[in-house]
Length: 331
Image (cartoon, one colour):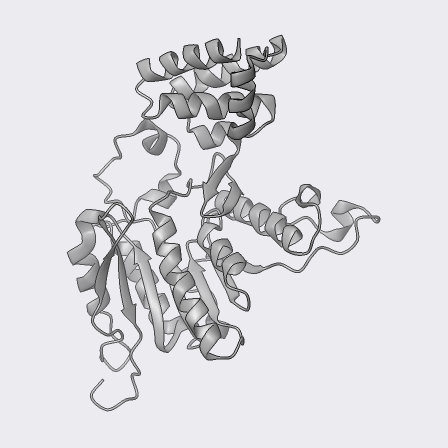
């Protein structure tokens, strides 16, 4: 019965134009059963029956996925590197291509920590969304001090939920006891103090936040909104479900918000610090020009020669540059 259900769901999703119908069918049945895909495949081999109530729940999930509701909204989770993040309506679903952006930030932070004999590197994630990049750095680079900024109320709530859950895991506690920023009183008198957060999460405008650490960041990384206003995404999962505030970068080129993020990076970074920003593959040249055009209050260039780097599929998807020392002669 399990195999027949998966086959039926695969057909339904394929007919609806879902790009990965078999994988999505398996993910949804695994979710309905409360198991992972590895366990589901074992059950399929064994020919185990699916309880009627689970089958009905699965059929409802398939109908919603066929209507092009994002898979991650249906399961409530999204993989990102080694993490599993809570996601849903109101937050941008992290993409595999952003994992390489995170890798650049992780590599730089790890290098700084090594050079300082284990002393912390300061990393800032602007427009953090679900908290994906910030949490990847915090969990993969021991000693990193990570700050994350998000303005949107809905996205900030999802980020808080993920920060709390992974902070609990880091402290050896049960992440199910966290509730996205609940106070000790909210959790009850027996819950004990909340674990120390592995990411300092700030609700605010990424262009103006964190003035208290100006000139101290070793890495500033961002996956800001960068889609031009007239470039509506084709996939219904993106166009109809990802929040517009996380997609559209404003201005005719989609880079108005990224320009503000670039100015913030210039303010936050120490001399020699690294800036990493994701962009669309068609924006590579414009993104380099944007970073090269950044100036300090004296009109001097802020960054060294920006370079474009590729994602795992070979597409140009990020701009990387180092902060210059504005006080140095000739800078």
